[in-house]
Image (cartoon, rainbow, N blue to C red; front, top):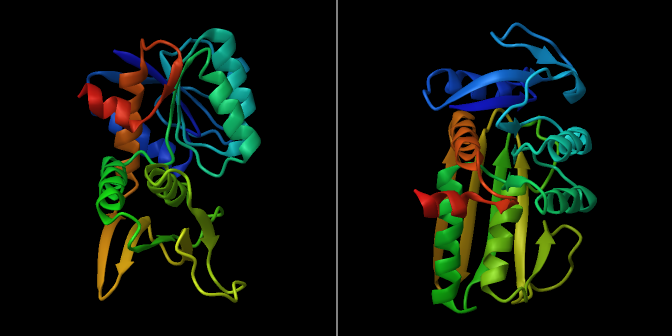
Length: 251
């Protein structure tokens, strides 16, 4: 049994995670962290210093501003953490990587199995297409999402760029670019509207043909399921930075 603390327990994703865990036999929620308290069937605290029980793992679906406090707690107490929040700056990403030198950290920009499969398919595609196709990534999310482009779009772009030897640069939209498209660029485009949970599409545009890879998330539960699976996977692991590919390799 994996004892879990949910950071951001009273938010939309926190509640979904709690609901998913309640239906599993390999994990249980022992506490939550949130500035807003609510009756969720387990104690919810405002800060990590108030925790009265040491969890096996923390699942974080909160806000980038919580990162330092959470990592301090995890490093002090030797607690693994699944970091599922997005919108981190470069300094915070460095914090995450530094923490992984001392504790197990599961970090990915998207917890969906489908998205991670899409990234693998995209890497295969660029290897076959061999630079002959232009690459554009289009992401769509609800009108409340703050960061753009999405962390998932960046994940996809970096997976592709790594396969291409990190020779490509990123161009965000095109309204300020008054020039022909370069062959060594990846375009990223963000759309915000309505209640779109998350859509990502990779276009490979060649001469007289277009190849498209697309993923649609119809519910936030796809991310929550992945995060819970990651928490169970991470419990008992040695220090290191883990991603979805590590979990899939062990399945």
